[in-house]
Length: 323
Image (cartoon, rainbow, N blue to C red; front, side):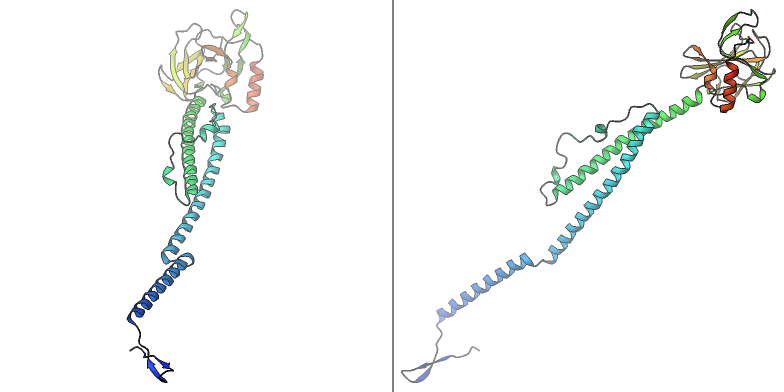
């Protein structure tokens, strides 16, 4: 119940009741409502500027967390680039150099992406620059990894071929040192044992008893095992590939046949004195692209440095050959 208000009337010297007009009541109510609405609006506005709502706090926390994650991601990308650059350096300066392959240019490893804007969908956000830069670096890293992966695939093929090459070239002495009497004659001008005329000797003669084992000096395929070549008697020819062929002459007997695959160190025959030979020995030759070359340059596979030095000294003596 509302309070009744009075005022003092000096004319009548009495208190009279204050009668509130209806129009004033409505007006007063409207002003009150308007003032309340204005105050509420100001409160909401100020609160929205300085006081965070629970949703805003959650979104702000999420944004901060995303920025942290992007920073961590960029650091991980930096570490990945550093590791990749180390592999790339070894790839260019060691692997590709060793296998005689051209290094991959830096511009090819770090080439960008042409054409349309790949990152347009990330534009227009508060952190667009951070997001775009992170995606660019990840794309560059992925492309660099693909380039390096292809390079390593190429190196693997080259390594396999190099391994095959190294095992194929005639790289060991065909008669073991313990079975030798001595190295009778080397590559170069020697005295013919039959005509006593000085002529070029295209192989090396290893003196050994009849029946001494003879070994393949490298991997390959036996192309000939016969006595149908003048002067050589029973002999074997092995095609090692890469232009190399080795020949083993004056054999006593064979341990292989034509078209047979052999490995370095396989027993292929036995020392004899067939054909144009003065005494039991192995006459050994090496061909490269059809030309005879000095076999002594290929004995790195089973001789020590001292043994090789002694062999080189004996091979250089201009003596009489045995064939």
